[in-house]
Length: 398
Image (cartoon, rainbow, N blue to C red; front, side, top):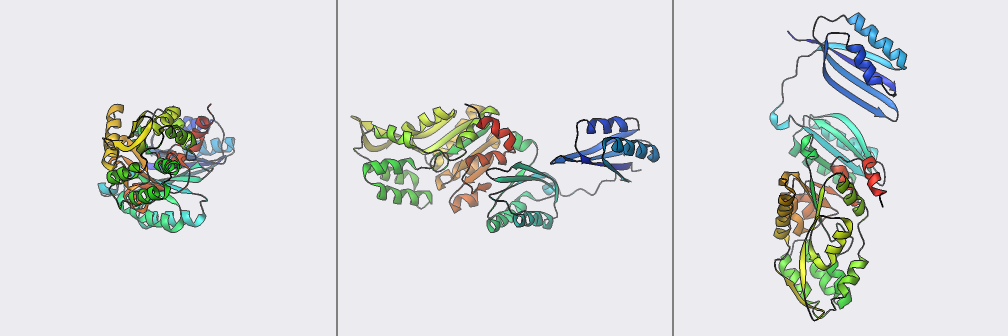
């Protein structure tokens, strides 16, 4: 015999103690709690409680207790009776819950409508919507149940492209909370520049190097070979230029906030780069980044020889560095995040638990779990479920 259930809903102006007082009132009756949902939107509370009746309920007494409490608190109460009979279980392939993170600058109603429409069309349900940020971008997160993750991710990727928003689909619950290590590319990700291009400007070979760099990032050239080709053009350059370039680097907006927030929350941070240790290591030290893997330029007599020393940090080298960093932290790859923009980032993006394409080339966007196409690196925090109000304190630190 199915237990009867009661759905009790309170709505109205939020105030301290509502939840406590409601459950104190319900404690007088033979009830057990089956589910609770509570949302507050700009001071307006919606509190829903589903209870099982462990004995034949005195509905009149329960109704009186709830309505008197609601009147005392200035709230509206609704009580609906039903059955606790469960719906048939869906296939385990789609029975999990998902986070769908929607980010736009601006975020327009038609984009939200398109995302919600695709979720509904997949026979899934939006259980909750929460705003994570409103500045400098707007980000909302939807808790979705009953969806096939792969199919929904593919469907929403199309919506994202059509509406110029970013959409991420991730498993809910402990999966995301377990993320403990984030590893980033440097050039055009952590910083706005390409280090080798800055060196090439000072060596007078900027056009030649930029052409090879662009082809390599599109995946048209083997990275290691292209790196050797480019560094050969730097032969004879005064090694002191490395310090000049380091001081001229421009951090990507939000980069410092991202690292400081993650560090405060207990994450470990690493960078992997096809660039050069002499430039990147001091920057990493300044930001408090824990792990660094980059290439080393050979020097002789205070000048660059034009050669890069082995091992070269290319696509495979970046993936290997991610694995080494994860081992040092003591976490599996499933608890890592990789962020990059170019073809040589594909190895680590594919190996990480969450691969993020940041203002990336099409081949990287297609391969990554999700893409961010706004110029703020700290938006990666929202993909981890970290809201803006947890970011600001880190941003204000000295």
